Image 1: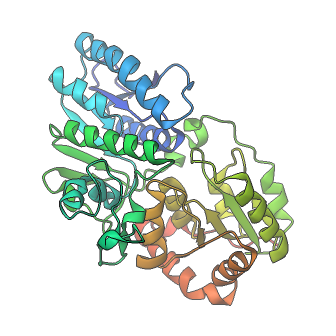
Image 2: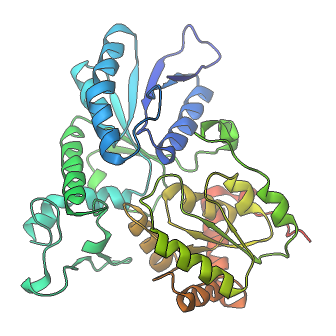
Length: 388
């Protein structure tokens, strides 16, 4: 269990924050804890002692069977003012409700994803998905892709965030979300790591606090990372001309894209003839994205990565893999138009995508990105001048 303490420790109200134990969820929760400390609260971030669980199902089982009883005992024996629970850690919301401790939900991504998850009963009613969450064939034949919304961006059943892995995995994730939705019922407040204009209709019954940007610098920089950052890549960037390098990273916790696709991507990057920095483990990402040599970010479109790219005004070449990444990509490429979707890793597709985001063809995209960055993060988010 990690702890951040306000200046008047003995009198400060205690807030317990419960993240889903994956890097992309822990980071914004730690930043939120730091913000609460700056406002005079004593913030305690509850995490398992070790990160032994390696996949979504194992993490879910460990939380339900191990963390839930321990957490409820903590609430019954300590004077906790309120709980902030990641919406994926719905067991903590249920425990707080049983202990009569007020709880707020914390949504780490776009509210558009929250809306889509909450729309599952309506999708079942419209016969777009089965009762187990699997897309149904259009008209009973051929394709299983149906339009969910004709608004911008247009979402389809291919974008459903529980469609990860094989059929059994997809049904298990859908059941996970249905259980979570039921546990969200007692909530009155929702804290969202996002900004206005990204949905939120399903949260109309709640008082919603959009708190982005949660500034990492004010929260102690990389202190929330599970892994040590390797800064040696910055020296490599120093050797390249402005806006010439393709930065490639698929985040901290995504389903594998497969050996064949990795080989295809590597070959495509080499054939494109542009310098690239491909991070497999962990790098100081904000420092990389702010570096003048970086021309674009080839990303899986995880929400933290998306926010960091907007903050650093780095154009996105999108290759979403699963989960909320698909919806994020729709907004990036279709609604906000600050990036381009990469439809495949084939050499021709990769070269075409790079040409759309690097160089004169991407001028309009960069202007929109600069405007969006300034609106969300302010003038302080400007990239430093390119290095020679």
